[in-house]
Amino acid sequence: MSSASSNSFNQTRWSLVSRASGQCDHAQRALSELCEIYYQPVYTFILNSHHSRDPATARDLTHDFFSSLLTKNNLGSPNPEQGKFRSYLLGAVKHYLINHYNTSQRQKRGGRIEHLSLNDEDQAINPAYPPPADHEFDRTWALTIIQNALSSLEKELTLKGRKQQYDTYQPWLTTAPGNSQKEAASSLGISETSFKVTLHRMREKFRKYVRSEIQATINDDSDLNQEINYLISTLSLVPQNTPK
Image 1 (tube, rainbow, N blue to C red):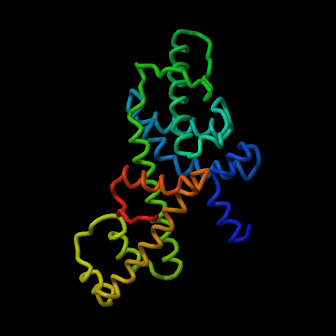
Image 2: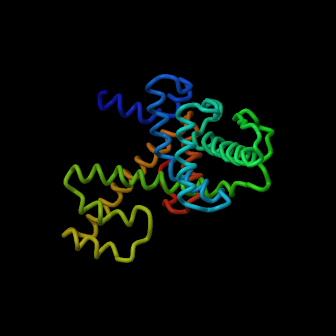
Image 3: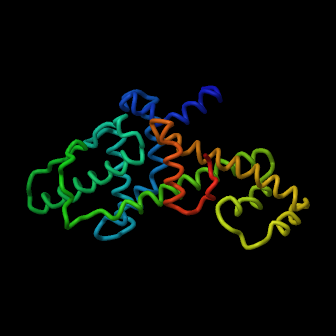
């Protein structure tokens, strides 16, 4: 696959899965990549949902959830009308937890095992096994998007032999660092003015990677700014001028 086609593929993963309903090889690969992006948010959500709050059990349930999702086992198919992969996956994991709880209860009673479908919209969540507030899922999603964007930027600069530059500027991309820009500039052997100019360019690159990460998880580009604003409000981490 060429670099250009690979970039296009990466930016349209969710729309590809939606159009192909997960049946072709490319759609399965795209869905697998999306699941990798969302592993930590799902794990965090399940850990906070499960009554035992046991990390090992949460990991097992997370692995089982994604295995079921990738094989289309009782979790339905991605629906283009659902738009955001984040919304689809949150609904899917909630139904998975309902199924898991109901199945475990039937097994304890020796009853038959049944499964719910994603189409069972009217199914009430068992009050004895309520999921946590959705913001836990969304907050971890936002952190994952930020971390993936930083990792992509770090990889780009490292390949260009500018790893020290990334390490120096990285704190100013997401937080307010303890040292001053003058001190950081001195550590790089440049003027404070040069530091500010490069920081501006670095932030632009970072925003580009944030956009790319989010774009891969939406079905309609018109949702992009909405998702970016939601990420900012959820995390209160990225500067307010982050990609527009």
